[in-house]
Length: 43
Image (cartoon, one colour):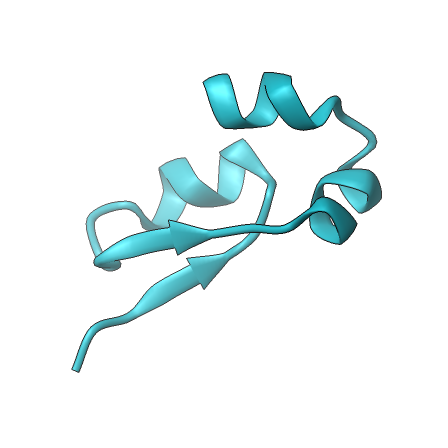
């Protein structure tokens, strides 16, 4: 089983990166984070 984190919050990704197999996100999550979609994807 693989575990993915569904977020646009970079702080959450950094916190859980050692426990997960990957990250998913979508425009709705990016909008909730208040950041630019391209900026989040680049980071």
